[in-house]
Image 1 (cartoon, helix red, strand yellow):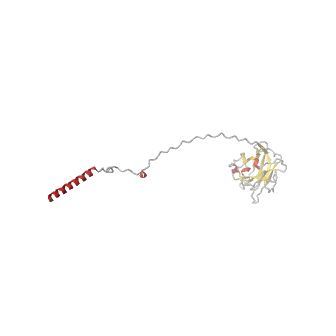
Image 2 (cartoon, helix red, strand yellow):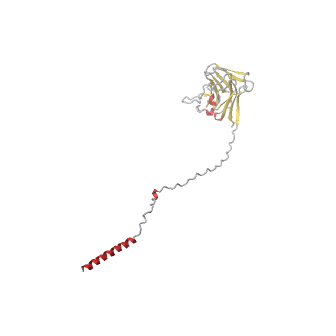
Image 3 (cartoon, helix red, strand yellow):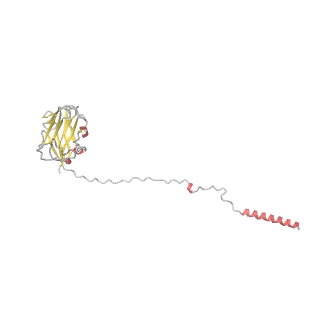
Length: 247
């Protein structure tokens, strides 16, 4: 009886081992073994997307609209003689006409300073009947010469103007501001001119509208030249003109 029990137990053990062996053999292989892991998308290095620079497009330039030319006229102030309604005023200088040195015509004005900062005025006189409005002026021009070189800081030019009169008056203060601002002295260099060589006519072009520090005024009544202390030589002036808009 005991022998039969041992035999039965041994057979059951062998049967159990066989079942286990069969189950193990049927177990599916782990696919992860020997497979290279993939990188999660958030850790992948993005492939750069090529960019392209757009070619510039050609923009058609519109034809400029022609601007109507302003009608202009020239007021001739001096050429051999002063025009009616214009003249000169001198301070600390000698003024005369001369036939020895002229730019145009038979006579020019000769100015001999006696002191530093003498003032030579070209002005509208009280018999003038044709006002010159500052806003109409394109340029004031004249020709200047001396036997000596005129350096850029040897002379200045200064506009004159009025809100009450169309002619020059010495004590006219209608354009002087309450702060005391007066007409600005401008070196000839600021008219675009360098040193004038000896015995050479140079054209001076003065633009009153560009004198931004001048007081506000309506009527242009003239201008004056002033010499520095370093320049006391005689100088000559010829063909004085004002170019204005002819309304």
